[in-house]
Image 1 (cartoon, rainbow, N blue to C red):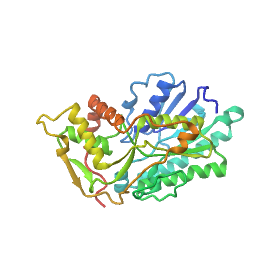
Image 2 (cartoon, rainbow, N blue to C red):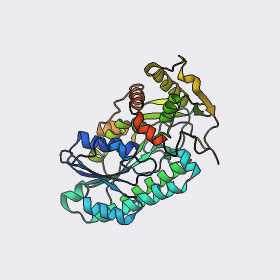
Image 3 (cartoon, one colour):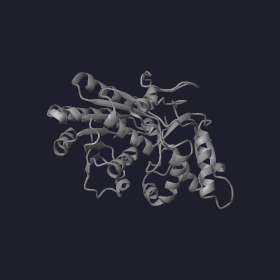
Image 4 (cartoon, rainbow, N blue to C red):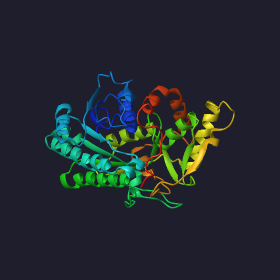
Length: 357
């Protein structure tokens, strides 16, 4: 694909956490046009894109990817050169409480989008057909859990343990099947845990920060020994753009941050950053608010990504190191209280989900 030619990119889930950071990157740092398709569920926030919403290269369509009629119309009207599919239900705890939404969006929705893409792709010819791509964005949770050593590679067998990861594994298989059966030019990425600006405050890092600031207990599952590889969301967005423009059709690329941490160590690091930037009025550390709670059902012990393939083949590597991304994230949440306080004015109040099984 000629990466110098501006493209028309259809992004699904562009009002979500990763999606909004990707859309912002595409508008601010490239000449591409973007159609953002998002149904604005609880985790989709149009305010996350207020700063670029007036761009002439940006369009927004409120639609559900499960709606096949709406998807076909979106393709016919916008005529994309590629699809970057990020729309998904993504929180493990919510999938434990209510798996139906995950099956509907992650599996049925991906099927609907693949079919709309296939029909549209079959109508293309010449250079327009040659450069079309469908990038399916997924998670390392499809691989299951690692022991104390080793890393997930692109050939690691799938072993999902939650309704969320099982639904994403299913959608990965669908995307690859549409490549093999219908020759749709599909690429797949599997990423490690993302963090950074505009993350809905149900995930670990914003929960820690916001509960700390509100003087509430900071819950840590089990003994805090579970290990995750942390990827700064802007680094991830840059990797996705690299894959869709430079990746080889049919390939899978694992995207990781080279940043493994035990959950308890991460929580302590976040508390220490808060201690230095916005210390408690009583002079004590935010670490005093840490509370260990019953573990999540089926909690995978360790995730770790081997991202050597994307580095060697496409030249991508994360820019944030073991602490810089976390410092940026804490500073962003402190600076953007208006954004997250509006979310907490609604039905979600940082309470634990997924514990009533």
